[in-house]
Length: 469
Image 1 (tube, rainbow, N blue to C red):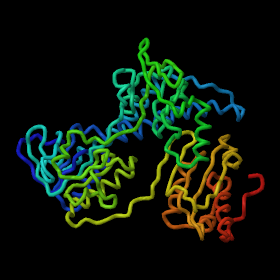
Image 2 (image 1 turned 90 degrees about the vertical axis):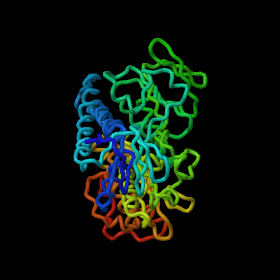
Image 3 (image 1 turned 120 degrees about the horizontal axis):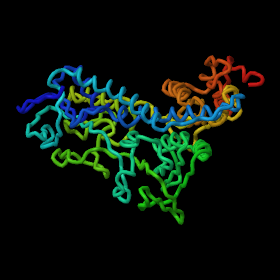
Image 4 (image 1 turned 90 degrees about the horizontal axis):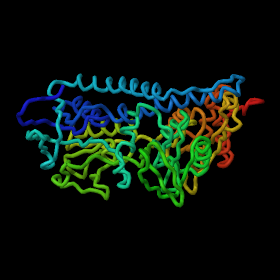
């Protein structure tokens, strides 16, 4: 796969980083006729496949399986899960490795000479030096170096008992107790998964908010649900100290020992050692090049940035889209074309899932509420809880965003995302044929509330909620 020659290199577009964004950038640039090089120090696979989306969902799904057994009693089925931690973690790694292998196959499919296994550093806006001494000259450069976990200084000295999402999936066994530092989306996903698998979990968060949820009603419901299986300490400063092979977490007068600590305080762009000072680029206060989000171009330089390296929308589909935009514009430089970005859209795979899409509610927004604690299909499933808050604008009730938690919201959110992208109104969405009994028809009360608020007509096809549903 990787180039092993010692001669200097030239190309049209050089991409630094072979993650989701970098692979998309190289592929699209090559499809535009550019001669490309893809430089990576490991070619280990994407963050999603190795330490992110896929292994986390494998662990989450194991936790959900255990929870479904506990819930079976309500259906007249008596059962108690017997959790084998070693087998849980073995499956996580085994299936994770399959996803990683599929990603690595993509490296092998690259044209000969494209993949260069090395570390790269800028020596100018168009030139790089590799750690083997070779010089790379290119018309344009795409920075797609990804991100790395942030570990606050007090936790760095505790070594093997401290985990991040880069290491947590390598555990041979489930710990008896786990402290989670940080209540962001990934921290909450993993915290709930471990708690569902019988681990005593306590989450510590410096701020008062969880999961990046901007809607106070949905956030309150998320907190309520999480507190059923774990302890949340919000608005506290947590500090560690060592004790008997574990770690003691101290906070605001409290103290508790844990077998392991998962530090989930975010990720930061991997830009150290890249030599950005040699590019002439303006950097923001996080050391990230200032760039145009519609073109991914850094200033007016022949340099583009994409994926987690730009510290903006750190989700896979956005990384792929940014990589494609950067790759196309790098190949066509100086003819750079602005592209309309996707609707903001995130899903947190808690149980039940949380979805945030579109624009947050503003002072003039109309908000339609659709509670799921009395929704027909949710009651059938014994999962009747949650809330959907749909945002719309005046005067016609055009949909602008939503925040939601409840059963099936990772799927239902896609329906609302499409409606928002197409400029639908609440009236227009109510004209959709909603099958009964489904979770989707639970959106209707919120859509009707918007129609009533803006005095918009209800769809003639909206026949209300069937009796007893």
